[in-house]
Every structure is written in C-alpha cells, then in structure tokens.
Image 1 (tube, rainbow, N blue to C red):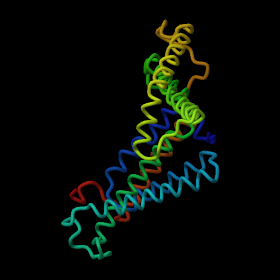
Image 2: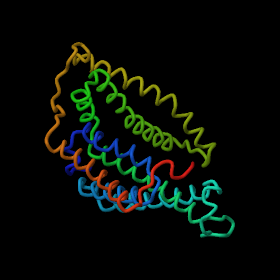
Image 3: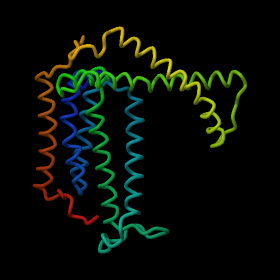
Image 4: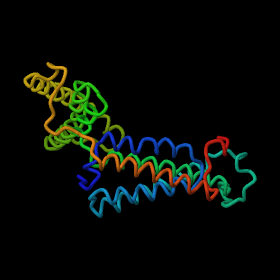
Length: 264
C-alpha cells in the first residue's frame, strides 16, 4: 500500500518509537509543542511512504477539518472561569475569548499529533510482520499472535460478504427505503447469512491450521522472521531525539506548558 522506508522498519520498533511521544504530548498544554510535532511527524510520514497525491490531499483536508472542528468545539465547551480574564474574540450568539480559543487549538493540536504519531507507528506494517515481531521481539506465544492475525482477517471477509449480499438482494428486486428503517431492515436480513458464512470460514480456517500442525509444538518457524536491524535502532533514536529536541526548544523559548498550568 505504501512502500518507502517505513515499510522496512520492524513493527515493534516503530511502536517503541512512537508510543512514548504519544504519551508525552498528552501532557502538554501549549500550542507550539504539539504543532511542531505535527509538522515533523507529517514530514516523516510523507518522506517514509509512497502515498498517491490524491490520498495526501484528501488526508490533509480531513485532518484540517478535524482540527478546526475540534478547536472550535473545545473552545465553546471550556469553563468560563478559566478564561475570564482574557480578551473577547467573538461576541455573538456565542462568546469566545482568546483563552478559550487557545485551549481549543492546543487540544486539537494534541489530538492531531497523537493521530499522526499513530500513523507513523503503523503505516507500512502488515499483520504478518506484526505477528512475527510480537513473537520474536516481545516473546508473545505464537498461538496467540497468529491466532489474532487469523481473527483480524475475518474483517475483510465479512466486508466482502456483506457487499455481495447487498448486490444479490438488489438483483432480486429487494430494495429498502432510505433512512434508519431501511438500514435496520437491511442489517437484519444480512445477519443470518453473514453468521453462516463466518461459521463456514472459521471451520475451513481451523481445518487448515490443524493440517499444518498449528499449536502442536512450543515453537514455530517463520518464513520471513522479523529481526531488529541497525536502521530500526536509528529510527527509534531519531524519533526520540526529535521529540526531546522539540520539548527542549519550546522550554528554552518559554513556550512549553504542561499539565497543571490550566486547571481542567
């Protein structure tokens, strides 16, 4: 789907690189720190993947709309006593003060930073790579890791089965009215065939796993084992160093605010 160097980084190392910054950014309360992390993470994603131009444009527009909506919503919902001493910026059917807008914008930027860091830690990772990395680097029992992968693969199966069912129903002239009532009727009519198809798929999968001796031995070989290479360590170190440099820079400039600066 994406390619690029992110697809070659060990999945567990990508999680190790992005999870601590995701936790740290939730403790910030200023604008500059999450904004810098958003820009740096977006640059890393664009340089580390091969995304189509249309995907980039649509994704950027979706993130921008989400950020604006979240900022305005939290600015409206903030408690008035927290920002009572700040200037009024909007005075109409709703009153927005500069402090409320700042809190809303910082909240939106934090959420965007967490979302982009989550993308950075997951783009280019396949379920097979993740299962292999969990088994080899995290010592997760392979029965659990690969069993979870097999369960996750039921999601696209159900999606395809539901699309096929709806096409078959329309071909037979079964057309439901629009709205909630039609949705409920379509869902109820598809429930039994989906459950039956899922049961058949589960039976075939269990027979295939038994035929391959799944669970018969304490260890299992892997055709493409996930290993930790030098570039994985460099990726983790570079990510942590970039986040640490951002925090140090904003602290040195007096822009960094952490939890406790605003009572919430």
